[in-house]
Image (tube, rainbow, N blue to C red; front, side, top):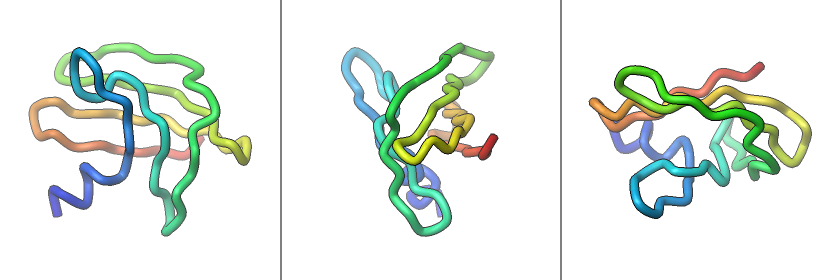
Length: 74
């Protein structure tokens, strides 16, 4: 199950993992991320508010401790 959660979000990783999300998997679809509208750090992770190519918006949370992603549609 952990691998499935990690695969929810594809991201560009440079200096550290999860620097910039580029696509997400939602309800059986792969959605390209058009823009990262906001990003911030919280204790234990990183958050992103993104807009996909189809104009849907999502909030992504990457939990560093458990190495897993959570996705909420906005």
